[in-house]
Image (cartoon, helix red, strand yellow):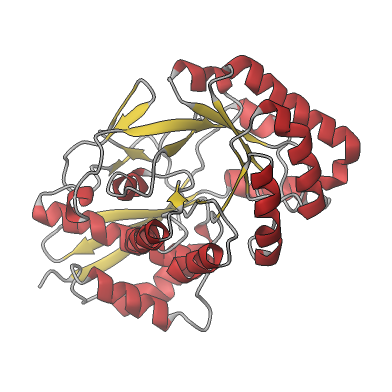
Length: 371
């Protein structure tokens, strides 16, 4: 038996992003509050959380929750004592143990992020033990490369990289009134003019709009041929999403959400209630590789595409294994990467290697914080 001997937790200093990212206004559900700048600083400087699962034969695997390091105590004081001594290759059983054990304080949020990181690390170990890339363990590739679109203000880079489109973090929401609407439209117009008529343009609202505002903005943006509006409403407003989707579809605009949803049950609600055209589950939030694979399968059975939110390398391994996922998002932060990787990016596509596991190692240039 390949025993888990330790689950180590690490927090690294947040990589410095390009100035464009934190100088431009970006709409959030908390933008209307005076604490908005402080919240953004917490996200930007709070550090990056990583778990390293170590096994009895020396094998190890990595997982991360990104900037949400609030998961650290949960891993150290609950999941680590629960899992040490278990068989690291019983991934499905251990997921179920973690999920059921954490029900009183879990099901979503930080608990699922912690589970995601551990689950992903276990898949990394599985690949290393078998000498196979994780996508092969999931059933193999369904395509050679993954077509990319870019997210962020660096539209020059998106075009230079050959990305098929660009997603715009929308600057303003309802509290900015008519002026904000004009500024949003001006931003979309700028991107359309630069990227050209054949590029796909998407609008990311990060839960910062509401139903009436989204309908009005969609009408203003209709002439620019945008592909989708992403997460305009709060994640729990399923009725709002259900009502909004046909309104946008009549304008030729798709509705996407799911980044802040968790587990196959959350995805099922969005799909069954007709809330979404494209689901955007995140491998670092939804429950890890194990759960993202289940979400992909359920979506595929209902003819719903899944284009995961900012897929890290583990997410890419699930994407390249699924016919439900036609492309991937690339966030152009201009920051030092957390992991060193060996995938290839060329002419608007990403190509994974055949390295065992995920083919990732921690970047030695990052600064680790002391506990």
